[in-house]
Length: 270
Ligand SMILES: [Zn+2]
Image (cartoon, rainbow, N blue to C red):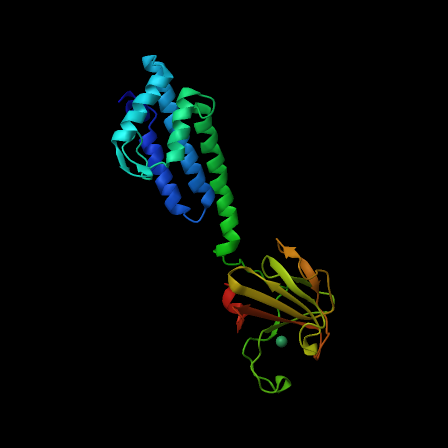
């Protein structure tokens, strides 16, 4: 009885509810489930210790009374319920053994343990956020133009004899050789060479972005990134040129979403 009142005085019932919510939100994280078990163990031990101190009971006698209580509430072979704890998952036999040992020989788990576990879990939750971010890729890229001075000579879908009447797969920005070219969004460089794609593209940089987007920059005079580079910010990745099949210096810029070419201008508000 005193044990249960100690739980209430520590607001453990609220903690347990918080743990259940946490486990539902981070069901895929085994670390959270493990820490929940540790927390319940530490919480029970803290209450056992307080009860022993409050009634000045011999720890052995208290352990024996709990054991009697446990035997009475035995439901089936390896699972016990109603034994002075209110977590939804009943503790295993080994966990009860450890709890009884902790009462008789108090050495681990205390108020400090409870606090330490809560701190570790808070860090764990933050860590989970950073782990899951690249997995779920929920943030769409924030697009910027690949050139500073925007002058478009050919739009997406434009049909011309130069391309054998096939619709234009990207947009052409005109400028002079050496004009700085920027990555349109943060991402990882997949290709930076003149050989991986068709020779008509000349020097090419291909970047993988979040949410299945890719951007391609072709006819570059030169590039200063390598395949495998992570571009965390917006930076100069190369310079405008006239390599490959061209009639003059320009940037042929393509945007792909899940392997399909899309109109890059649909991603820019102005
Ligand atoms: Zn083009």
